Length: 191
Image (cartoon, rainbow, N blue to C red):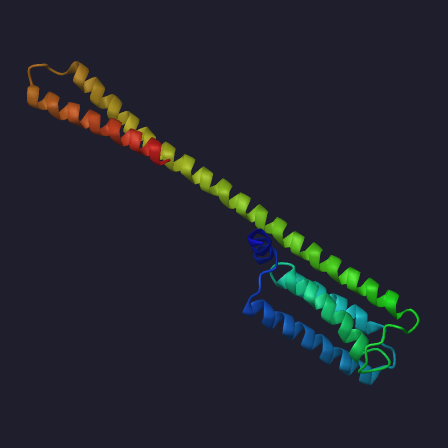
């Protein structure tokens, strides 16, 4: 059960922003169709407007929930408010069941396609961000390792050429060499 809930939360997130977008898009489409009803006697444009609305909702919102909800609401809105007999659900008129089943299928497919495209785009952006992060780490790693290696090598050369009787100088150089080696290992572990 927890697995199903986590899948639903991932693919069907619900948010206030997406709810407002959904309600606004359905409202604008409905008002637009009402205005077009005043100008023309044909209602063939209504399903197309609502399919476009579903596509826009699917593109702008996150997940599948709002796109599929828009498809279902659109089918019933077109049948109830914009198809004769008005203000009644009637799927028995010749040709309407097929029209509405087709509209629902197209709307759901458009919603799923739009959501799939958004997920693919998100994956590409995340992959690019990961590549940039890796390149930055390689660059920083190189920029840190090079001076540390040079410092360690220089100290080793000075130690090899120094007078063994100057114990204080030798001790300082030994400590600097140990510190540079410790810092090099720390950078390796960090990166």
